[in-house]
Length: 168
Length: 430
Image (tube, rainbow over all chains, first blue to last red; front, side):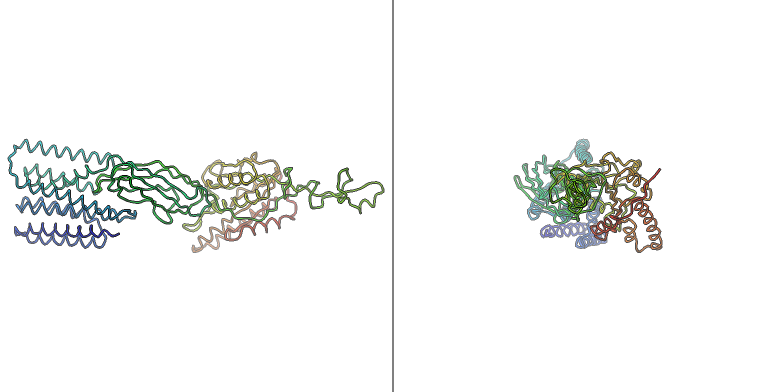
């Protein structure tokens, strides 16, 4: 199984995510947490090199929780968004790697890899840009407007969850 | 938890935290995740339209022969970023080379072939469907589709060529064949002398006997050689089957193979052969001749399996009406100790009974050779079996005691030759 570009992108995303999140914490003086995050990133990468995958989802959840915690600690939000997006990319690429490395032989692997990387880059690039732009926009909404918008998002998500449950 | 649940619950967590904290920043943090999920939903393929065809290089093979299977998949719909195609193998079959499942990305109109080979086991194997799992590029929303694609593979038992088997049933059929019929007529073996009848060839005249009589001519009579009705009974009772060492075949597989070889040998000699598989149910092939009958019998044997059926645990319900009166019965069975009275009853009813018995004691002893006290246990079981076989032999039943690691042809020839001139059996009496 080749997946040369996927592996490179995965390692780059994981390093970017760990370094960015650690930097966000380090800039505010949380050096221990920063070191912990860097160690976690390195551990995950070493496990990935040893072809053991279950850590990916755990690290993804952990980094997301640290991003949420970072908000309350008033860390740099652009860095947190970048870290989370990079971690999402790393997590997705890790899953993709394991999916195509199963015992099922893959045909057109190069094409599949190329399409996957293109689409992931496009989608997360758009997501990152929108999220960073949203941080710059300062509009004041009433509580009820935010509440209704959030409810709509939650409703959509629950619909997606229900759809998945029905299919599963 | 599945991978898609991880990302979905994280999105829910971020949005909820954003609402609770009334923070636009946290909602912004959730945006890449939400856009990722939304893109996966948008890019998930709608209707999957794949044209799948399955080709086999053989539909009718001998068990153990490799069969190549090729699948051709053409995408007649939109681009599919990730598709897994799984050809569902019938139970008991496994891939030998290649793979029965692939993962691929399909462009519109693209065609992909993949093939694999299987090691065919005895049986009628039905390929029913192909499983398709199509998902979005991120693998979050897989869609499962089953395509009905029916193929059948008949793996008949391998047939070992046996030499002609000597049988002598009381009743033969009125067509020429290799079996001595105990009736005078045209043949090769001397049968008796009778008075000359118009039409007898002169070379049949027995001049020595004629010389002793003044007026009459006497001719030699020869024993007619005819074909016979042969009924083969395969014992498929669960309690007589024996499992060997782990992963090896059961004794029933040997019974099937020897039944196939016997059917082939009797049909090759021109006999009318029928089959009964007695055990789980009663599968039967009615009497017939020739190659078509051989194929019918092999197909029936291909499907035969052992099973538990309480009424058929003994041979009490053996349907003898299936077999013509006083014909030859060949029973392929490891035998259980309760079978002797029924078999003797068959002999008493006029059937000529030949039993080919794969030795279950020897078969299991080899599988359990490393266990303690096995030597004593085997000795006891062998004594019990020897007594059973002797009881049958004394009743005039020919028994082939076959150790499955030895050539069956030699065992049959030895047994039938030894017993050809055996003393007349003690008749069974009530």
